[in-house]
Length: 181
Image (cartoon, helix red, strand yellow):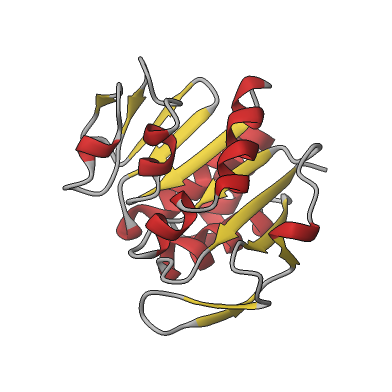
């Protein structure tokens, strides 16, 4: 079974987190919700609180197939402040494993140099944080092992791209049809 870890920090974008988790789980991807806050409950940018499956400090990501960063503010900045998360992202990228970030969260990848020479997208106004990337206006951009998404209204496109990458086109289409997307 394919696995994913979705990281939450205080101020995450709820639609991006919950929508992605739901689509991945529908697609048969074992998705673990991970807190980088040291707390089992994390509150999003609009007041929704989510109980996580694991604390970052107690989780192991060596065998995880995909690492996912929902956007939102100040959630994306809080993710960017987590040095341990950034180390895991660099290691994951070095191994060619899937990394996905949506909305403002690609700023974390840009700051790490992971978007250098790659195509990427993000929420309008955050383009300067995608250091070295060729900025695309598309809803979702896949470049090698990195998927970036533009924002909350495109969460289904973003999550289905992850499902397609990990499980294949047929599974992604089955999930999309079930969601009436």
